[in-house]
Image 1: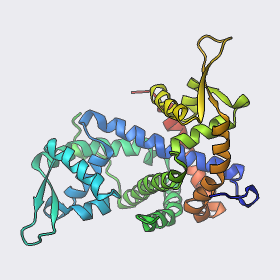
Image 2 (image 1 turned 90 degrees about the vertical axis):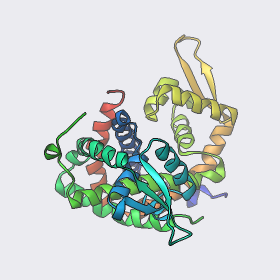
Image 3 (image 1 turned 120 degrees about the vertical axis):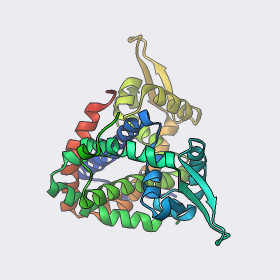
Image 4 (image 1 turned 90 degrees about the horizontal axis):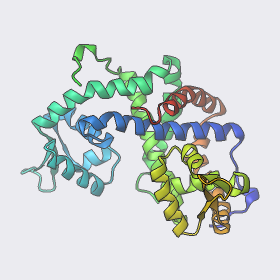
Length: 159
Length: 159
């Protein structure tokens, strides 16, 4: 693990400053959105699962697909689904025609919760992120981040 | 908490896609950087505290200043400093001339750890973020995120 200091490509002041801003936005925005969801008893992860299920056919997804869509490990998703099952928002179902298939299904309560919370969450995203960007800035941000997202998605599960 | 659906400014497809990309980068990048720090027994929060202390006069900071610099609550920082104290990376010190002053101080081991880990962490930041952006993209990203970071920093501790 030893590297010589001369080989290190240290960040320039400009890079350091941009990096710090990215880190701060990343952390503070998550914190703010979690705080805005708290009155509804939901976390960001909960909300994301409700969104995924509500947009799926028959409001159900295979657990492995849901893990991939929400960028979580299967074991972590399983714990999360158990918590949401206890809250009555989702239920697990085995598919009879597919013995390997374990699904997460949105309950009626989960669907109602989603409809109630979504307008508040969208306002929160607008207020703390979207409304602070011009259309041009949003487009530039998207263009800059897309290759990074692809790179990072491709690295999932690799050492 | 009721809002009528007609009042909701739902995200457009373009906004939704940019927002999703931002969320994914935010989450996956944290995950990747944490993974790259794991062989050294450090988390991102640990690393950030080592950076702050190593750049401070006498390698020490008042706990309240360190909490502000790392965007953590004082109680959370206190737990973190206890873990790092147990690992020998920092120590707490009371300032005799300032009865309210509790400081976190970098130990020699903490300083050595910082010197050893920093080149690896910088390579990780370059590889998974910086090297994927042109100078123009980095500058645009920084310009777009700066008002958001300022907005969110201003909201800390507010309801």
